[in-house]
Structure formats: C-alpha cells, structure tokens
Image (cartoon, rainbow, N blue to C red; front, side, top):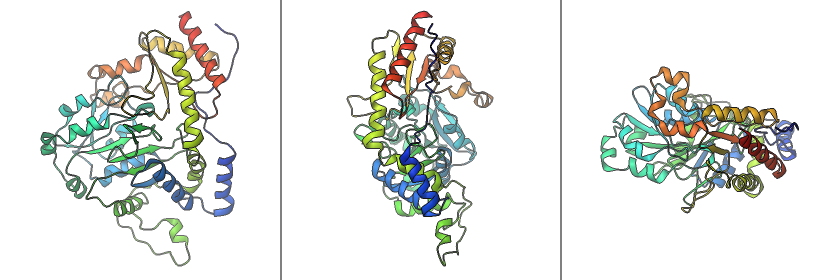
Length: 409
C-alpha cells in the first residue's frame, strides 16, 4: 500500500471571489439579509436556466417538497410513493404531514422502477416522488404513462381543489441532484409537474442550505396565482415578505394560511447567485470533464458498473455524483475499500443506505428483502470526489489509489 498521504476531501463547496463579492454586496450594499432582491434574482436565474414556468426559492429541499404536498392537499390517510433507494428526506416530507409512504424498488441505474408502480398505486395515492439519483433523471415518460393509464386515473380520488383540477396523481420530482440534467432533450424542471432542487452545501449549486421549487403544471393551473400562493405559504401564510413590509408605508399585511417558514434568506441566495450565473458556461462543463475522466479510467475494469452520463434518447446527467459500483463486492468489502482510501487521505461516500435498512423505516414495517435491486445497488457503491475546484490530477490520484487497493484485496 502507498505510504504517501494526500488530502482530497469527498466534497468542497465553491467559495471563490465571485461568491465573496456577491455576499459582500448583500452585506454592504443592499442592506438586506432575509428574503429580498437576491432571492428574486436567483429565482429568475433558475427559471431561465431550467425553462420552468415559475420558481420559488426555499430554505431546503425538504421544506420545498412539504410546501408542494401541503398545497396539493396531502395529509393523514394519503399515500405518497417513493423509491426505496433515496435519502430520508424524500420520505420525511410526506411523513411529517401525516401521510403514508409507500416504497417501490429501483432499476439498475438507481432510479424508481416504473414497472413496480401500478401495483403500488391505491385510491389513496396522491403523489409519486421519483428521485434523480446522482444527477441521472428518472424515467419520467414511463412514470407518466403509468399514472395516465385510464384504470389508474379512474382509481384516483381527488380530495382537494388542486387534486380536482389535476385529476390524477401528481409527479413531484426529487431533483435535489439534477439541476442541469436533461431528460430526453428537455431540461429537468420541465419534465415533471413540479421539481424541487437542493442547494445544500454539497450540491452543484449551493446556498449553504436551500432549494428551489420549479413549477411545470398543466392547464388549467394558473402559474401566477399558484406562485403567489406558494410564496405566501412559505412565509407563515403572510401576504407580504419582510422586505415588502420594510418599504416606506408598506407595513400592513395579512395572514391567510397556516403556513410554513420555508423562505430563503438573501444572504444564502447571494452564494447561489454568484454560481448559477456561470453554471452553464463553466461550472457544469467542469463537472462533466471530471466525470468523464473517471468514466475513461474505470471503463477497463472488470466487474464494475459505471454511472450513466448520457444515452441515445437525449438524457444527460448533471454529474452531481460519480457513483462507482463494484458488482462483485459485498457491502463489507466496499466499506474496506472506503477505509483504505481514507488512510491515504481520500474522502469518499455512499449514496445511499436504502431506507428499509434504517431504524425509522424498519420500525414502520419496511423490509430490505422486499427491495432486492436497491440492496444490489447499495452493496458495492462508492461515491468518488467530484466538485468544482477538483483538478484532473487529483482525479488521477483517486483512480490510481482505487486501482492499487482493488488489486491488493
């Protein structure tokens, strides 16, 4: 084993001069820290980048998803279908509103298996949350085909004005990883009814903590009124933001809903604003370059499954994660590999521990043996460092270390 110790963390948020300049502008020029002009500017940038019909910035992916579930009328007695292979927030956004989570297995690419959907749908199903794991989009066309089948539509029981208006199960994309991804030629943000992005510290674009809700609702929904309502719902049901109330003579407001506190502060938005403005031209291409360096190196390995980068149908990953899978590893062998890499100073991760393996979900009655593909995806998966600022030379160091350790096992 090598004795040289390097230092390549699994992730490092991009905090460079443009970010610092934007934050300092917030601190010294605008004179505003909570939701205000920076948030509005970030919403406009995301809407333009994704081609979504409307965008609302929020303080986390979880609060954004809860906001949409509340708006759609999801609560106790309702069911929300999710993949078993995802982060806990995908489930918790529904559980925290009193809804029941129903899990289905995934395909070999980590995304929800549409062939499992129909048998999981009941008259209580209100929402399906596909997850774009690692930045690779779920198969939205296949999911839409299932939920628009006449038998499934006939089974749907609408119990809120929004459910009546839609007349079917809502597709709420967990797009936490997939800002900048493309599904069959269309940007993520326009391929589901609603998509929620995450801007957590480790994401492609970060605001430290934060997220954005992208609306792409069909007729007869009015996006202007829906946007206005969601902004109010995200501010404790208050009809004016603090920024609007702070304007001369603008103090009067009303509380019209029992809302959430889900708004994004300007101080956070400033970080994301400095990044989104160069995401398409430089930050995303840099991630793709690093992703493809890994692809080229590991393409010669036996018993390895590479993550998807693109396909012949026009889908492209956002390259949020590089999820390498050793198909002949047990999860113990994978853990050993991670430990050996750590000893050389290389940080890695696993995305994710399937939900049925976690105590909360075990106690709710979920069994890992019911989701065999999810376990197969998990047991040999190692997420490698990939982020803006990681150099091609550092990628080569990671690759060489994995090759040495793999050979020595």
